[in-house]
Image (cartoon, rainbow, N blue to C red; front, side, top):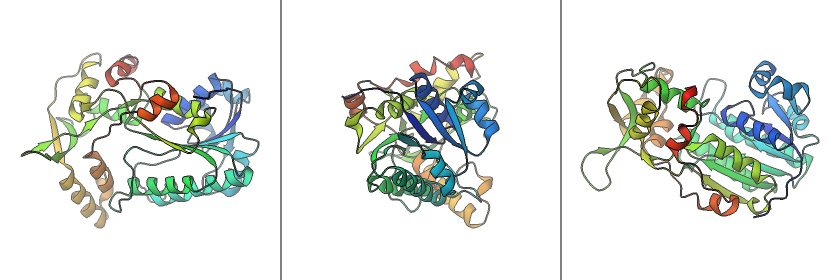
Length: 328
């Protein structure tokens, strides 16, 4: 493993998001400077830190992925780029095609114009692949193909379900177990038909701690071994989805009352979402067709490549959850 470290200037998209702010914090802690693309200076100052911005350790670049001038300004003078921007559900103005595919193409082109061999680290996701029914999964896969054909010195990271005290999924899961979010009376998950028996079963997940994901992104910058490689990363503890929700519950203070876990078959849920979408009512459901499809699949990895090239084993879920449970 090669790990010669030197201070660099790193361009980053999605730096004010959940994973992004942890990556920025780690970059700053290691002495790097950051140039961050942002749509809101107020949000950037709030989540990235006014001191870092006022001291010019973080430079803010106003703009979006569909603004070539903003992207040229973002990567100007930078040694590397970390691209994180993604959405888990479409809106009227933000589609998977626009954000994941067109956005990746735009930032890759800006990097190539700045330096045809620029260092580039890309956020993908565990389990992506060609799938016309699941827009997130399919568009993330096609974005990855753009990166792999770019000519840049790229590394691709594919995290599974990411958790942390300020993460969207963790906040949702905690609201579920506390009965503060629909469906209130039970813990929901997507189930699937058993492959070797009768009845339904829960998928297996291995939530990965956001600090471990940030570590891989930052350490990849100076690790030449990682160039041209794809890294799947999940936590080291595999649990059934409803058991993961119960782990959240038993680590909260005060401990919420027990609620039953009830699975909705993903096939049924996916058709429900498709019909709702065709009727223009998709926004009434808390999930879309692609979320139902992916929700019925396992989200695990043996982390072999991460362990080999980064020299660490990602943390177990409950152990890392306990480091921040008092903030939930």
